[in-house]
Length: 83
Image 1 (tube, rainbow, N blue to C red):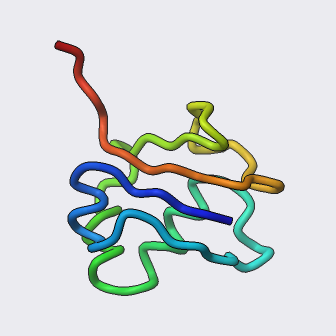
Image 2 (cartoon, rainbow, N blue to C red):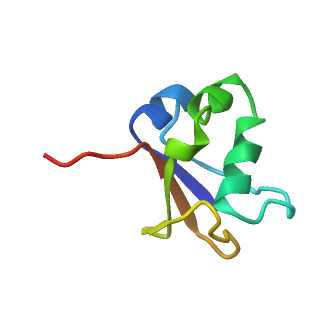
C-alpha cells in the first residue's frame, strides 16, 4: 500500500510518500502507526503523539480503529485548522 505524509509528519519522516507492506498482524490505522513508530527514529518522532495524527484511507477520513485491509493509499497528517 502507498503511504502519504503531510505537513510536519512529512518533515519529520523526511519523505512525502512510500510504498510498504506491513505485517499481517497490523490490521488497523492505530496498529499501523505503532508499527511505523518502530521503523526508526524519524518515524518515532513523527508519530510520538499518535492521538493527534489524522488518517485517511483512499481519500476518506477514518478513525484510528479503521481496518486497513484492502487500502490502496493511507495518508497521515496533523490536525488542520480553517481560515
